[in-house]
Length: 319
Image (cartoon, rainbow, N blue to C red; front, side):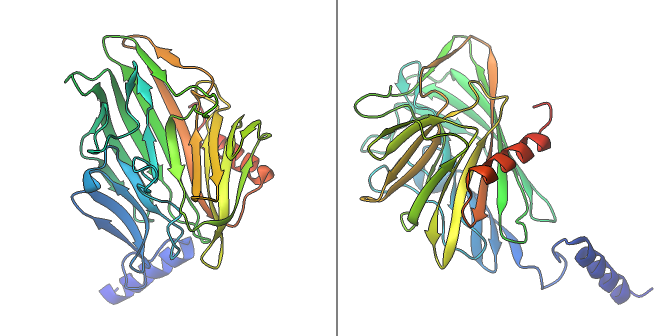
């Protein structure tokens, strides 16, 4: 059999299996790598990009996050909160030290450190990202908390949707660690953890959840749910980003901190499991947080969120 025939048969088999034609010019997707980033692009447009040292950021983060060929659904470092890194994870207070906000020089009181991420790309354009992080006060070289973060990113489906499965394993150092937040009050607080700041160009915004909205204070909401979806109009269609809580997480179903403020605009969503009270981790003890982040076209209602949560649970048995 000639090499040309083998090549043709191989491409035909890939097509029959529904896989991308990775060996030929017809493939629409490409990996893009640099010293500071890992990205998936389609026809030259970034679908998602993981940044691990871009522009002096104090946290690793994803931006842009988009549907293939679409405008970004995330906003990195908006003027009102420059420490909002699009899709990112950050603690608020660890033992009373602030790891969230930055001062005018771009520094945080608490330091989040990370090494170079390892990434295993797959031929179907899914991938596995691994990252080790350390959390320490600025005045100390010793971390009080460490994290092993794993993010499994699915291949884009036919409609462009894809998911990121986050697993974050935390372990305390030689002393207990108090994980805390700004308590909800006249100025609503309660946020910390996995967050997304959505694009300012998102219009006709809606928020859906698998539970009632709970407390509402102006344009800020606090409630418990297994999943929340933030969606709206963008480009010539509709799209959204959903975060699904995992039932193995502490205090599941998670509390949520959501902001819908068209005046700025300010579109924000946080899986705020510390919202009602802090959490104390004993010395040398550990715990794990798991979430699925879904990037999707159209709008999801509560029924769709429930179905996606059930699918997530089936895909992660025994977690």
